Image (cartoon, rainbow, N blue to C red; front, top):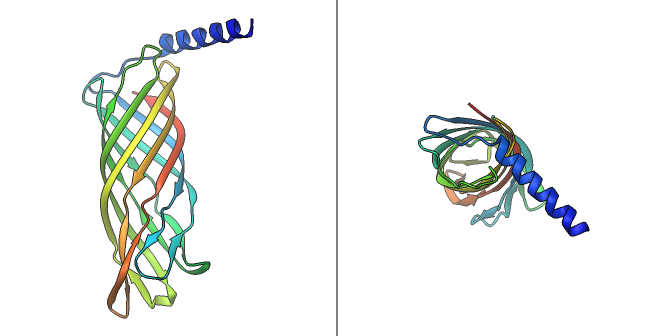
Length: 199
């Protein structure tokens, strides 16, 4: 009885998803707002055991469809302030602004659920750097690859629940006394959940 009930509930859910789902077409725009958790890899070659704090941040993205399956996504947020540590000791703060552009492939599913994968580039601009009272600094720009996978679940005709995971490669050179003393790799994994509106 329980198995039958679960099966019927699953069929009803799939049917409702198919009923409300709308196929994306060339020119469709999907705008999402997400809460994203940043989990940094924190790898460095300076010998200082550098790291930044993990945090949850807001994210907005705009996905433009060239066809029902092919799209480009621009991911934006506001400058994020991070604490910087050497081992367990905080040595300063910085801000980073990391817009990302990816090319995506969206899969079709009879239930209306829309999984996708993407790859592209991230550009990160560092600012307001304050390390060791000015005794250390970092290069201000980083360009690296970005990979993502996600899925959109239809909630109504043009409203979707989104789950998204990205791996972004961000690194910068660390400078002290006018010399490059190594590279700090942030290379975060970003896990996001949010809502998307189709236009």
